Length: 267
Picture 1 (cartoon, one colour):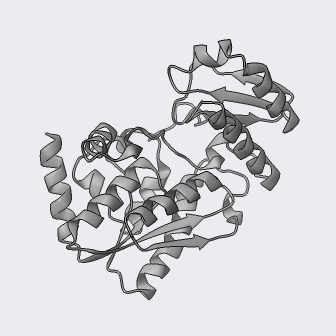
Picture 2 (picture 1 turned 135 degrees about the vertical axis):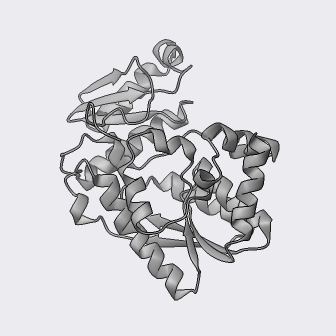
């Protein structure tokens, strides 16, 4: 089944001619970019949008991936969009509209016919207001169009021998802060530093959700017991308190997408 989906993906890409690929550096957009790169039948450019709420580590990893394959990579630096300053529930919709407007300007300036993003079939089953923005703007999602799931993508990357096949899921830092909360630059820096501390101590993919002076840590499955029993636990707590958190909590449900989404919200 995955083979048929990959074939469909390749046929979609071959028929595009030229495209800008919105490249976050995550697993999905990396696979899409790599697939387009391998196609040779499509003129491509990778565009990464750098905003205050995108972790620097992700920008760096995106640049390294594109450089490894000699893919033209452009970074667009944007200020914080004021229309999402208070983290509204339709934040993702408003953000996508803003970011992809700039990507569209880039595509028009450099004569690219299409704009692609890395949304996949699994994204249709979650609360993703950003998907509505993509549809309204005519953004193509070849992974979704070919029916590829996250598992299909990771399996394909693994079979290709790409090390990023098991890279943890990524998301912007705004997802760490409750909706309808004013976004302060210092809060974003604190969250990023806190997650860097966890990453450096062997907890990739961990999220630090900020609830005032409380840090709620969500670990990937398999890391809960490790972090509780680890000799470095007290050191991690001390470092997070030094960042300004008063209480450090470990969420026993572990990491899951949308843990700050409103309850019973329609998809």
